[in-house]
Length: 92
Image (cartoon, rainbow, N blue to C red):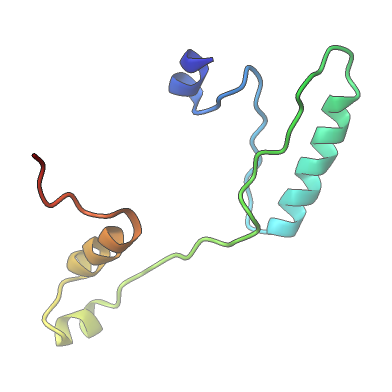
């Protein structure tokens, strides 16, 4: 199981991933796949592992607006990344 997680990012022996922009449609497809797989002989612990229906935000810095504030587009993205994931400031 650990090898599966390291290799493919899944913590299961079999995983189905679907991608798209319409979250409601993705949820409907996931439930349909769940139902189809769950009916197969030997299938056990069939689950839909999906985050809540929350869309991702795409950030495209406006270079001129950033420059008017004395920033580069990369500095804006770096600040956003720091808010989203944190920044290591030191270790002991």
